[in-house]
Amino acid sequence: MAAHSGGLTAVAPSGTAPSAVTSPGGTVSVRNLIRSFGPKGVLNGVDLDIAPGEFVALLGPSGCGKSTLLRALAGLDHDVRGSGVISVPERVSVVFQDSRLLPWDSVLGNVTLGLREHDAEARARKALAEVGLAGREKSWPHELSGGEQQRVALARSLVREPQLLLADEPFGALDALTRIKMHGLLQDLIAAHRPAVLLVTHDVDEAIALADRIVVLDSGRVATVRTVTPEVGSAVDAAGHEALRRDLLADLGVEPVASH
Image (cartoon, rainbow, N blue to C red; front, side):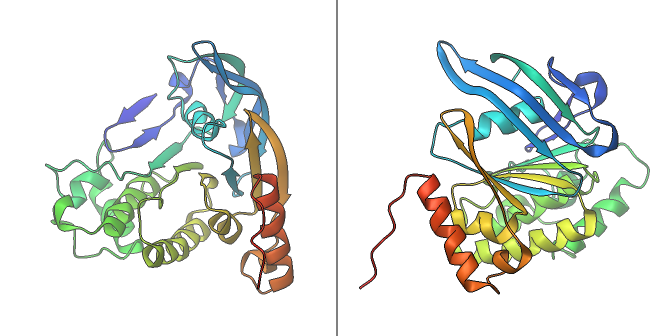
């Protein structure tokens, strides 16, 4: 596994986690995944499949194992006890809630971090243009807003053309308006690059708006899996959108708020 500062991890066949293998065809497969921290079990037999190009959102209460599952897929949990079989594509990138930009490097330097290809700079400039930051290549991270920093993090991940993009609450620290803008940007980028995506989020509305399928974890197990149609996700089917939202809140143990 080649791990790069700044929150990006590219998982290669020779360096995946001990229980992981490289998946032919870009599919993701998790079977009977168990992970524990000390005496505490966090994942208790998780099975999950993600098809190439599919967007899966992972919901669940704090401590249910969402981030632990994501880190297992990224090969970042070597110090955790557990078992199971993980099959991931050759190229995997990770985006965290904190953009994790290197403060001493430029925007362009952060995007090209770890790249050795001769065309790395040209690809990085193209990626920055895709996220709306053309012309900011020489800027420093502290000169960017929170939303712009996350755009750089997305560019840094997507410039590697991942087959699987793992996103751990990437918009959790942003204000509501910026989050909505980032949702649209992410949808456009995913449509252009077509990686499979696993998004960890606490936001039910975010999951509905972005995902093809929503998986709810509870006590380290998959409790519910719900499919999101394009009409429901975009709220064209308003009734279906609201019904799915109610169902997901119920899955999470949240009582609906009575209307007056």
